[in-house]
Image (tube, rainbow, N blue to C red; front, side, top):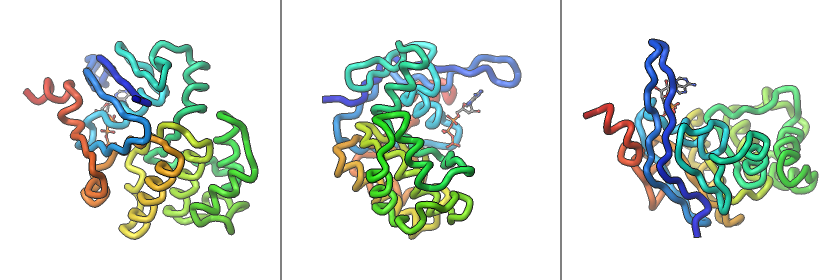
Length: 226
Ligand SMILES: Nc1ncnc2c1ncn2[C@@H]1O[C@H](COP(=O)(O)OP(=O)(O)OP(=O)(O)O)[C@@H](O)[C@H]1O
Protein backbone atom coordinates (compact mmCIF):
# COMPACT_ATOMS: atom_id res chain seq x y z
CA UNK A 1 0.00 0.00 0.00
CA UNK A 2 1.32 3.46 -0.88
CA UNK A 3 1.54 6.26 1.64
CA UNK A 4 2.63 8.60 -1.17
CA UNK A 5 1.58 8.41 -4.83
CA UNK A 6 2.51 11.18 -7.25
CA UNK A 7 1.29 11.47 -10.79
CA UNK A 8 2.02 14.01 -13.56
CA UNK A 9 3.37 16.55 -11.07
CA UNK A 10 4.55 19.87 -12.49
CA UNK A 11 5.67 23.11 -10.90
CA UNK A 12 7.29 26.12 -12.51
CA UNK A 13 8.69 29.39 -11.18
CA UNK A 14 9.13 32.78 -12.79
CA UNK A 15 12.87 33.50 -12.84
CA UNK A 16 14.28 37.04 -12.28
CA UNK A 17 14.48 37.60 -16.07
CA UNK A 18 10.68 37.16 -16.20
CA UNK A 19 10.79 33.78 -17.94
CA UNK A 20 8.64 30.95 -16.54
CA UNK A 21 10.79 27.88 -15.95
CA UNK A 22 9.63 24.33 -15.31
CA UNK A 23 11.48 23.15 -12.19
CA UNK A 24 9.67 19.92 -11.28
CA UNK A 25 8.16 17.55 -13.83
CA UNK A 26 7.74 14.13 -12.20
CA UNK A 27 5.41 11.77 -14.12
CA UNK A 28 5.28 9.10 -11.39
CA UNK A 29 6.71 8.46 -7.95
CA UNK A 30 5.47 6.46 -5.00
CA UNK A 31 6.52 5.40 -1.55
CA UNK A 32 5.12 2.35 0.21
CA UNK A 33 4.09 2.32 3.87
CA UNK A 34 7.28 2.07 5.97
CA UNK A 35 9.59 2.30 2.92
CA UNK A 36 12.82 4.32 3.11
CA UNK A 37 14.13 6.01 -0.04
CA UNK A 38 17.05 8.40 -0.47
CA UNK A 39 16.96 10.91 -3.33
CA UNK A 40 20.25 12.01 -4.83
CA UNK A 41 20.46 15.13 -6.94
CA UNK A 42 22.63 18.10 -7.82
CA UNK A 43 22.23 21.46 -6.11
CA UNK A 44 19.43 23.45 -7.75
CA UNK A 45 17.84 20.38 -9.35
CA UNK A 46 14.51 20.99 -7.58
CA UNK A 47 14.68 18.54 -4.65
CA UNK A 48 13.50 21.02 -2.02
CA UNK A 49 10.73 22.20 -4.34
CA UNK A 50 9.69 18.54 -4.75
CA UNK A 51 9.57 17.98 -0.96
CA UNK A 52 7.69 21.26 -0.43
CA UNK A 53 5.09 20.15 -2.99
CA UNK A 54 4.65 16.80 -1.20
CA UNK A 55 4.30 18.61 2.14
CA UNK A 56 1.71 20.99 0.67
CA UNK A 57 3.86 24.03 1.45
CA UNK A 58 3.89 24.74 -2.29
CA UNK A 59 1.05 24.01 -4.69
CA UNK A 60 1.66 22.36 -8.07
CA UNK A 61 0.72 23.82 -11.46
CA UNK A 62 -0.80 20.42 -12.25
CA UNK A 63 -0.80 16.80 -11.15
CA UNK A 64 -1.76 14.89 -8.03
CA UNK A 65 -0.01 14.07 -4.75
CA UNK A 66 -1.86 11.41 -2.81
CA UNK A 67 -1.00 11.12 0.87
CA UNK A 68 -2.79 7.91 1.84
CA UNK A 69 -6.29 8.37 0.47
CA UNK A 70 -6.23 12.15 -0.02
CA UNK A 71 -4.89 14.37 -2.79
CA UNK A 72 -2.79 17.13 -1.24
CA UNK A 73 -2.89 19.07 -4.52
CA UNK A 74 -6.70 19.28 -4.55
CA UNK A 75 -7.14 20.70 -1.04
CA UNK A 76 -7.63 24.23 0.27
CA UNK A 77 -4.75 25.74 2.25
CA UNK A 78 -6.25 25.00 5.71
CA UNK A 79 -7.02 21.42 4.65
CA UNK A 80 -3.46 21.02 3.35
CA UNK A 81 -2.10 22.34 6.64
CA UNK A 82 -4.21 19.77 8.51
CA UNK A 83 -3.25 16.87 6.24
CA UNK A 84 0.41 17.82 6.70
CA UNK A 85 0.12 18.20 10.47
CA UNK A 86 -1.59 14.83 10.83
CA UNK A 87 0.52 12.78 8.45
CA UNK A 88 3.86 14.37 7.64
CA UNK A 89 6.98 15.08 9.66
CA UNK A 90 9.33 17.48 7.85
CA UNK A 91 12.97 17.84 8.85
CA UNK A 92 14.12 21.00 7.07
CA UNK A 93 17.54 21.80 5.63
CA UNK A 94 17.64 24.77 8.01
CA UNK A 95 16.06 23.55 11.18
CA UNK A 96 13.37 26.26 11.50
CA UNK A 97 13.39 26.11 15.29
CA UNK A 98 11.68 28.96 17.15
CA UNK A 99 14.41 30.74 19.10
CA UNK A 100 12.07 32.39 21.61
CA UNK A 101 10.91 29.01 22.88
CA UNK A 102 12.59 26.17 24.76
CA UNK A 103 13.42 22.84 23.11
CA UNK A 104 10.43 21.27 24.85
CA UNK A 105 8.11 24.07 23.68
CA UNK A 106 9.38 23.68 20.12
CA UNK A 107 8.38 20.01 20.13
CA UNK A 108 5.06 20.73 21.87
CA UNK A 109 4.19 23.49 19.38
CA UNK A 110 4.91 21.14 16.48
CA UNK A 111 2.60 18.55 18.03
CA UNK A 112 -0.16 21.10 18.72
CA UNK A 113 -0.82 21.47 14.99
CA UNK A 114 -1.36 17.72 14.61
CA UNK A 115 -2.73 15.23 17.11
CA UNK A 116 -2.23 17.65 20.03
CA UNK A 117 0.54 18.64 22.44
CA UNK A 118 1.44 15.74 24.71
CA UNK A 119 3.97 16.64 27.40
CA UNK A 120 5.06 13.11 28.22
CA UNK A 121 5.47 12.17 24.54
CA UNK A 122 7.41 15.42 23.79
CA UNK A 123 9.67 14.79 26.78
CA UNK A 124 10.17 11.15 25.75
CA UNK A 125 11.12 12.21 22.20
CA UNK A 126 13.72 14.68 23.47
CA UNK A 127 15.09 11.97 25.79
CA UNK A 128 15.12 9.59 22.81
CA UNK A 129 17.39 12.02 20.91
CA UNK A 130 19.66 12.42 23.96
CA UNK A 131 18.43 15.87 25.03
CA UNK A 132 16.44 14.99 28.14
CA UNK A 133 18.72 17.31 30.13
CA UNK A 134 18.13 20.24 27.73
CA UNK A 135 14.35 20.49 27.78
CA UNK A 136 14.25 24.11 28.96
CA UNK A 137 17.19 25.37 26.86
CA UNK A 138 16.62 27.72 23.97
CA UNK A 139 17.80 26.32 20.59
CA UNK A 140 20.48 29.05 20.40
CA UNK A 141 22.09 27.58 23.54
CA UNK A 142 22.61 24.27 21.70
CA UNK A 143 25.20 23.09 19.20
CA UNK A 144 24.19 22.62 15.54
CA UNK A 145 24.04 18.84 16.01
CA UNK A 146 21.83 19.23 19.07
CA UNK A 147 19.52 21.66 17.24
CA UNK A 148 19.25 19.11 14.46
CA UNK A 149 18.13 16.52 17.04
CA UNK A 150 15.45 18.90 18.38
CA UNK A 151 14.23 19.37 14.80
CA UNK A 152 14.11 15.57 14.36
CA UNK A 153 12.24 15.13 17.67
CA UNK A 154 9.72 17.78 16.58
CA UNK A 155 9.17 16.17 13.18
CA UNK A 156 8.77 12.67 14.62
CA UNK A 157 6.83 13.40 17.83
CA UNK A 158 3.37 13.03 16.26
CA UNK A 159 4.25 9.62 14.80
CA UNK A 160 3.76 10.83 11.20
CA UNK A 161 3.15 8.20 8.51
CA UNK A 162 5.51 10.01 6.14
CA UNK A 163 8.78 11.71 7.08
CA UNK A 164 10.47 14.13 4.65
CA UNK A 165 14.08 15.03 5.38
CA UNK A 166 15.90 17.68 3.34
CA UNK A 167 19.69 17.31 3.73
CA UNK A 168 19.17 16.64 7.45
CA UNK A 169 22.87 16.04 8.02
CA UNK A 170 24.18 18.83 5.76
CA UNK A 171 25.31 21.05 8.61
CA UNK A 172 26.80 18.31 10.78
CA UNK A 173 30.24 16.75 11.15
CA UNK A 174 30.70 13.05 10.26
CA UNK A 175 30.01 11.65 13.72
CA UNK A 176 26.90 13.76 14.33
CA UNK A 177 25.69 13.10 10.78
CA UNK A 178 25.93 9.34 11.26
CA UNK A 179 24.15 9.50 14.61
CA UNK A 180 21.40 11.79 13.32
CA UNK A 181 20.78 9.58 10.30
CA UNK A 182 20.53 6.40 12.43
CA UNK A 183 18.18 8.16 14.81
CA UNK A 184 15.86 9.33 12.04
CA UNK A 185 15.85 5.93 10.33
CA UNK A 186 15.32 3.93 13.53
CA UNK A 187 12.51 6.19 14.75
CA UNK A 188 10.79 5.87 11.36
CA UNK A 189 11.09 2.06 11.59
CA UNK A 190 9.74 2.01 15.15
CA UNK A 191 6.71 4.08 14.09
CA UNK A 192 6.16 2.32 10.76
CA UNK A 193 6.74 5.66 8.99
CA UNK A 194 7.95 5.94 5.41
CA UNK A 195 11.04 8.11 4.89
CA UNK A 196 11.97 10.21 1.86
CA UNK A 197 15.40 11.73 2.44
CA UNK A 198 17.25 14.10 0.14
CA UNK A 199 21.02 14.28 0.22
CA UNK A 200 24.14 14.62 -1.86
CA UNK A 201 26.36 13.19 0.87
CA UNK A 202 27.75 9.89 -0.42
CA UNK A 203 28.09 8.43 3.08
CA UNK A 204 24.42 9.18 3.82
CA UNK A 205 23.31 7.78 0.46
CA UNK A 206 25.44 4.67 1.01
CA UNK A 207 23.41 3.80 4.11
CA UNK A 208 20.24 3.30 2.02
CA UNK A 209 19.34 0.17 0.04
CA UNK A 210 17.03 2.24 -2.12
CA UNK A 211 18.63 5.33 -3.68
CA UNK A 212 16.87 7.12 -6.52
CA UNK A 213 18.46 9.65 -8.81
CA UNK A 214 16.39 12.85 -8.93
CA UNK A 215 17.97 13.64 -12.28
CA UNK A 216 16.22 10.51 -13.65
CA UNK A 217 12.94 11.17 -11.85
CA UNK A 218 12.58 14.83 -12.81
CA UNK A 219 11.92 15.26 -16.53
CA UNK A 220 12.36 19.05 -16.25
CA UNK A 221 16.10 18.43 -15.84
CA UNK A 222 16.35 16.14 -18.85
CA UNK A 223 14.65 18.76 -21.01
CA UNK A 224 16.98 21.51 -19.74
CA UNK A 225 20.04 19.36 -20.38
CA UNK A 226 19.15 18.12 -23.87
N1 LIG B 1 10.26 30.74 -4.98
C1 LIG B 1 11.05 30.59 -6.06
N2 LIG B 1 11.01 31.48 -7.07
C2 LIG B 1 11.78 31.32 -8.18
N3 LIG B 1 12.63 30.29 -8.36
C3 LIG B 1 12.73 29.39 -7.38
C4 LIG B 1 11.95 29.48 -6.17
N4 LIG B 1 12.25 28.40 -5.38
C5 LIG B 1 13.18 27.69 -6.05
N5 LIG B 1 13.46 28.27 -7.25
C6 LIG B 1 14.41 27.77 -8.25
O1 LIG B 1 14.14 26.40 -8.48
C7 LIG B 1 15.35 25.67 -8.67
C8 LIG B 1 15.37 24.48 -7.72
O2 LIG B 1 15.49 24.92 -6.38
P1 LIG B 1 15.47 23.90 -5.16
O3 LIG B 1 15.69 24.67 -3.90
O4 LIG B 1 14.24 23.07 -5.25
O5 LIG B 1 16.74 22.99 -5.51
P2 LIG B 1 17.52 21.88 -4.65
O6 LIG B 1 17.73 20.72 -5.56
O7 LIG B 1 16.79 21.62 -3.37
O8 LIG B 1 18.89 22.60 -4.34
P3 LIG B 1 19.91 22.44 -3.09
O9 LIG B 1 20.42 21.03 -3.15
O10 LIG B 1 20.98 23.46 -3.41
O11 LIG B 1 19.15 22.78 -1.85
C9 LIG B 1 16.49 26.67 -8.47
O12 LIG B 1 16.94 27.07 -9.73
C10 LIG B 1 15.84 27.81 -7.73
O13 LIG B 1 16.45 29.03 -8.06
